[in-house]
Amino acid sequence: MKRCKRLISAFLTILAVLVLPLVAHAADVNNIGFKKDVSPVLKERFGVCEEFLDVKWIDKSASVGTLKADVHKQGMSETRYLIVRLEKPGSKAFAANGNGIFYEIDEKQYANREFEKFLLGAHYSFSHERVFMTVKKGKKTDRFPQEPLPFEAFITHESDFPNRSFSSFSKTVCVAYPDEKRAFVIEAKKPFMKSPLDDKTKQAYDNVARYAQEQCGKLESAGTKTDCNLNYLKDSYSLDANGDGKDDYVVLLTDRKTAKARAGRYLLLSGKEGYVATDVSGCLGEGRFLYGFSDGKSFHLGRCSR
Image (tube, rainbow, N blue to C red; front, side, top):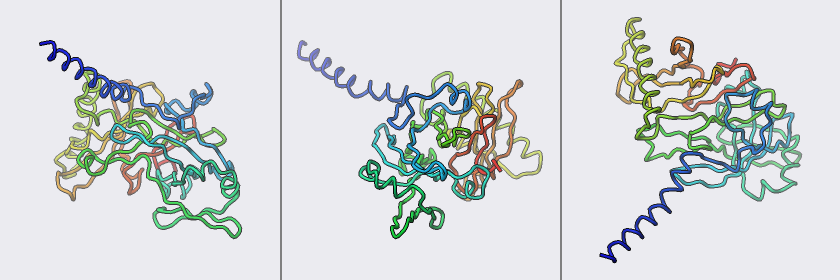
């Protein structure tokens, strides 16, 4: 009997060591790449942002800097070193860039002052679909692969292509431009992706599903052929897009359950009498990952910022 109690005690101790850190991790995901001392002015100006990445700006005029940050994947994290390059919001380059603002470097390059001098005032060009960024200065040329962060696998493919993110999709993460007059929104919450949902999140999900169903009804009444497939509703993004302190949602609807299904995105914007749905299908181009920017007054989704 005593031996049995010792075994149970040992098992519970091991369980606590393994599980409790994961629970704490899920409750409040931290990141060495998050700014530690965010000014009250920055917080107030960009209320949509819950965290800011701590970019070291090398060339402020070109919005080029470097970043050391944690990347979370399947409950684990690893440190990555990145070049950050932002485009001017509303420009063609901004639309072409999408959420591809990070390029991979190593730790030695990140810590090297000569590397920073190389980036300062250099010429930047990009390969097809911006898979690589070429940096040229004088006689020196170097090429860096794009680091797709965050990377999102739809719920149905997550086991094959795990999600990678800065906050495990638990926060809205931004990069403030060097002048801090605008902020690039690079990651948003995905509150419905984990199972099971707690009571509060389940209530929010049911509410979003009801409005999504209503939107499908409007499409059907307008003559659009659809069976209102809500399979991807758990991939919805959540962020306070209009600054009213309430979560707004970007949802994905498809017209049938086959691989050839046409998809549409809708922004459910909170108001006094529930949500108002707006078709934002073209805002993210061919990419499926959310991005946009805030000018301090409103949030602009993807290429719809133009």
